[in-house]
Length: 244
Image (cartoon, rainbow, N blue to C red):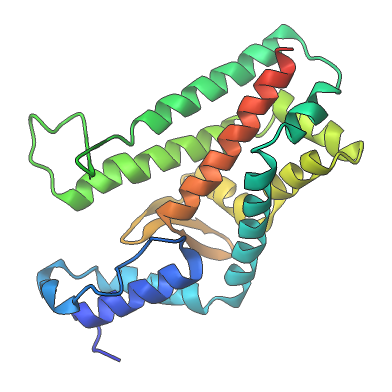
């Protein structure tokens, strides 16, 4: 293996990480020549060590696989009206609960709009005043948008009417509600939610690091985007069901 802090080592480490925790299309392409990467631009050794620990963490890998399987299952279910039909059969809520859910969905959408691109590059509100390096733009827009979306979906909206609806549907043995409940309570999502609630998260070269008493989750932007999209679709179908 190439020595630490060399371009070859960094690219190899990133490929191992994305092969374990990433989604299709993430990570350095197969034909990328590590020699093209100046040593000065190599990721910090602390980041590379963090990725290695994540790849070596058998418990974390298992938690991720469980979460990914649920997300993929729900991604298919949410292309239909299965969840909408289930939620529509449940008792209606007071108007204030509906307004709270709508507010959360709207703020979630605002957070998503922060991740805007021009010719494939992130756009920030400071582009006319500051010539920010690309890694900083990614941290401000791509990762910033993900953190805000996940906070809205997993922390702000964790309690309240949406949670009550899913709990009621799960108790009534509605299959899609049951899968949503499993997603919201699985270890991987629970640990991300706890880190967001306590502010114990930070950016890394390969995405976001979420820290709790059990260690550190390093989640790739691609998977966090899939998770966020799944949560958004759940919220939208809940709004539609409550608005009927």
